[in-house]
Image (cartoon, rainbow, N blue to C red; front, side, top):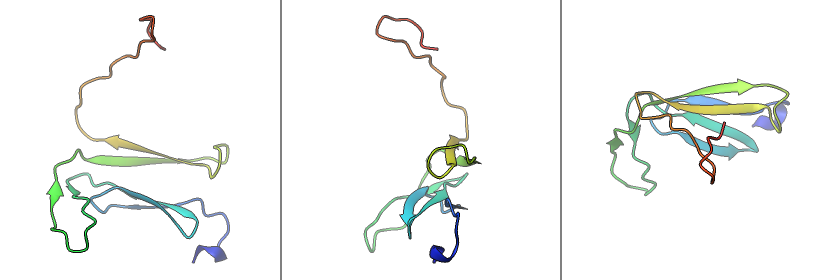
Amino acid sequence: MFRQYRGIVGVLCGHLHRPLHCVWHGVPVNVAPSIAHQVVADFREHGPAAFNMEPPAIQLHFWSPDLPEQGLLTHTSYVGDFAGPYPFFDATGALIS
């Protein structure tokens, strides 16, 4: 399917209420999570349909020819208030900056 096109670095779409990542016909595919609930990841053929109240999330995509490999960087950002940020310290107790 993608063989007839040159320069495809990935397929980005969403949402399916479950973030998914795979390689399809040699092309990375990224399905964004929902900003509401997520569907339970039950891969049994006839598993029950259910949802989880996991944190809503969005994905931010950045493409640049200067990035290694295919030039595409995806960041998942969870929506809501969460504790932190908490600083990191090295083995001596010094703050890592």
